[in-house]
Amino acid sequence: MKRTKINAIFAVLLWAALATQPARCEEPCVDGAKKCSDDAYAATACESGEWKRVECMRDFGMLCDSGECVEPWRYGSPAWPKAEDEPRATKESLAEKAAYFEEQAVRLHLHPKLKWINPVVLPCAKVDCAPGQNPPCLDCSKAEPQEEMATWQDVERWLSGENDGLWNALYTAAQAFKYAVTRDEQTLNNIKLLLEGEATRMKITGVPGLLTRQYVMPGIPGLSAPEDLSHYTVDADKLNNKWVRIGDEGCVWAVDPATMQWQKSDHCGLEEFAGWKWLDNVSKDEYSGHMFMLAALSQLVDDEEVRATVADMAGQVGAHMVRNGMDFTDWDGRVTEHGKIRAGVMDDFVGFNAAMALSFIKVAHAASGNEKLDKWYRDCLLQKSGKVVCIKGKNEPARDYTKYLPTNGFFRGFEGCYSNYNGVSMHMLSLFDLIWLERDPELKEIYQQTLDADVMRAEGQPRAVINQNNAWFDFMWAAMKRVGPGSDGHAYGAVDNGIRMLKQFPARKRLQEIKCPPDKCKPYCEDRAGRQTGNYARPIAERCVRHFVWWGDPYGLGDCEADPRIVQPPQDYLLAYWMGRYFGFISEDM
Image (cartoon, rainbow, N blue to C red):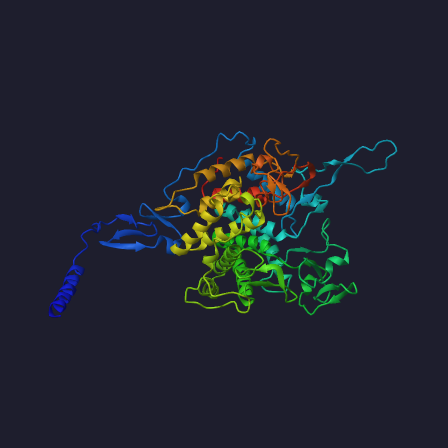
């Protein structure tokens, strides 16, 4: 006993003596010396004879490279490929296509009163009348004016639809990345115009934080809401998107399905929108685009007016979600059909919903600065302060949402033939924003791991996202992939493929005839809707012109018909291009 006590005292004295000695293995502190931590999450510099540590990751979301904090996509000074040997490249350069599409978007697709971007139908070409014909005589196989000269004033019909908000948000995000690269004043003005439309999209619902899918204002030639009253009937089960109109007194009106008569609701206060109509039952699809846009604007556009608008909108969305238990609740007090953003709800796979919930609240906090939202993110969704049930009465256990992430349900069926490509796009946006905004190294690595192992390079899945010939996904992956010590480095192959897809991208977005190569586009299996699909991811040169091509199924077998009168907006090209420019994958001279 006595010896044990003496040994213990000796051990304490020895420890104390050692603690007062300088660490023999520590490098001498020479002013100007710099070094990185083993995990590259911190930088240390010698100043005035003392080592001073900077938390690159925790404070700035960066990595340490040669003693300096750098953005992860610039770690190690990567030399990105240029894909100069792409055989199917258009004669126009990447920059030339971007310049044309930027000009076209504003000239043709962006009505200054609507303040959102839309596909258009151009008028038929006028031709000489044959004997016996009465003018005007038209050739509707041609447009007049043609796409290159037409403006929004020439549009015969605006192809507005239930996903207007999603597509316009992605265009606005493209403008945010462009502004971060160019600092162009015209781009900033465009962003402000688009944000006015975005604010209207929320304000017209009369519910803070709730956006409409689609709205129609009076007096816009070529744009109208449905006339059939069945589109305005109240849906008892909230399973269909329904139009409502705003009366002169500022109240929402809907049609009673029993009497087919208009009925005034008690949802009022919307006098400034008298005569307008809008589509209810907004979905998570729409919000995935809106939140991505708000994240991009908050991180990339340093204009005070823009930041104030973004902070207000993001704060409203976050507060709405918290107030309603992570559900989007419509003007009529009912939860929208696809508006449940919770892991416990059984309308989607738990990992998909969990990532979206984490992402939406993370973006709402980052853009608004509302610390209550950060507390909800950490204490409720991540359970950082111990087990607590925050979402009550909705089958939500007290569980860390990151535990759900691997169960995203994407690659279902034989070789993933039941894949939901709409869901994949939403999930990519969720994970991109989480990785971009998260500075906690442990959490960031969890999100990067699920992006890698469960989505991009899912083991044994031929339809893993890395194989889909999707430039937008390629660039998101390359920008947010884990790099640095312990990783397998930068995604050079993905960047190469993404650049090739953009080089193939058609220089015009009017509908064009495209045939799927019969030797490659062969029926292989059934997709989740029971349609025949292939196992060949069509490169962009072989895909139909779409509203946003990256959102679609790359394995479809259908051919495409030409129609020079229908012109799709170019946000798919512009978003991938400007993200590529911002992250350094594409140079200005390419």
